[in-house]
Image: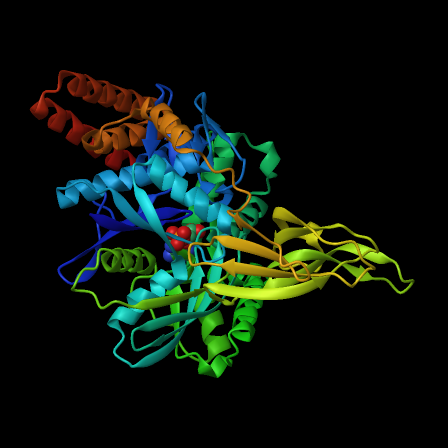
Length: 561
Ligand code: AMP
């Protein structure tokens, strides 16, 4: 069975195509969103999803969040004595989603279509595939998030031809894509984005505003108090999407402070951030060779598009209200599930032919002539420009730069900068050329980029006809099958609580948090109830577990009131 997975920065979802339509599978807590959070508790147990999110509020130092931002990088997390790469952490989230899907479907799930931001480069896509493999999932197809969202809208769309702009503002990334659906062909016309702009930036602004209101410096608080302020900032941000004014309370040690904020106050502080959204929008419209008025539908994806200020910003820019007929949190996962069904060749889904574009420019290093006649190396010569429809193949001719040159090295880069040092180096290829005065020998360099983000570079010496080619798979250090198997074994040794105990674990984490927040007699009562509940869990007596569980839930709720 193949499922579709939206592996998000903040939340992840799994969906399946069943009975002619895609739908989201609920997780072990009966919820549609699984927080992309991993933690390791004091006993060494690995917590994933909602339990980890709750736990991270009291133990941020033992928890990892927003690790999707670092996929494909060397960053490491040290949690409770275990070292994790972002791929490892993602694999734990995927594993949890896989289990939930298996429970729901009643059969093994061994393959997934996973979505990634359109702006993810090759390294990050490979890292995502690796995370899938570490979770025991075959991931042959990675789909761009906006493409997935457009497939979801396209499926329900009745018109013959539509031009969409997918506006995807998630937790950590902003992606804009312009797509055109014509009959059964979905063509990506342009993608643009910002890997470091998302809902979390709006939270940061709120966090700063709360520190100001508190009259405290962030550094003067300990890590737990900082987490409490961050928590309050997130609560305030979410609330201001629904209300014109909201009050949160922040407890710093013994002291509890109420803070109030209005929407207009918040919107004012976010003006600069909103302006940052404009640039990728303009770039995508320019690259797609369309005008703003050519966009038929603006489709919203990502939790942060729920903010009214984002919606009115879009309405002002496009002179129309965005389409929200599909839930912005769910459009991507649903599209991934439709793609999974297409891959399985399900007869129920009309096959949409996808054409995608290359999200970045690929080119080589050249020297340019200076005014004084000397040469300056380090310049970038684009061969396949960003937003070229893929698969694509382009050839450029280059000439020798020096007299008697007997070798030419083609250095391959990815990026948008005029100077190669600001771009990503992918690798190089050297060919021999006959010695001759500069400019007399030439090479033809052909770049071929396919739908799976694999770049083949072919160099042909024009005078001798000698050819050399190389496949570039990005800088990402690919693990061999043996290495993956070894890492899977290591991950298998982690202590992960059983699925059916997740609710109980969640309650214990909540009780711990309630204990920390409470004082005096309340604390004693919580401690008693927790002990009784833990004893019941140890005894495995179902009735006892249910009784003590109910007592603990009631107590926590009562204290909160
Ligand atoms: P995603 O990665 O798509 O799950 O988006 C998560 C981001 O959306 C986080 O930064 C959330 O804080 C933000 N978000 C979710 N719901 C809301 C809301 N109602 N108002 C404002 N931001 C939200």
